Length: 125
Image (cartoon, rainbow, N blue to C red; front, side, top):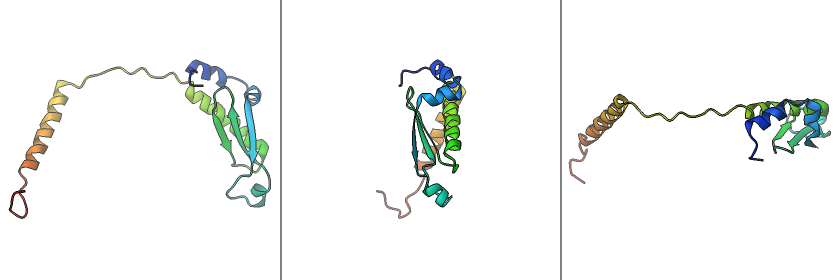
């Protein structure tokens, strides 16, 4: 599952929702939270696991199982789009001489402040 590239995720994100749904294992369960009997007595919450990638999405916002399935598919597609983004190539940089000098000067000033503190009791420890 870790061997997938951003191109693989982009290809999966472009699939129609019905094809994407066929690639998923669907579990239904009782939702929790507000909604009373409509939530507590029906298996309206949906958990989808995308088999090729292992991505798991859950929706329990609606009292309708059909609506929660649609929301899961939308969330899955959004996650596939997010993972399909090409990773940015990091350009190695070095701090400028001036920024190094400022940092070292600030460290020196801080050490001087600490050295100049006097002991409150007057005795050295």
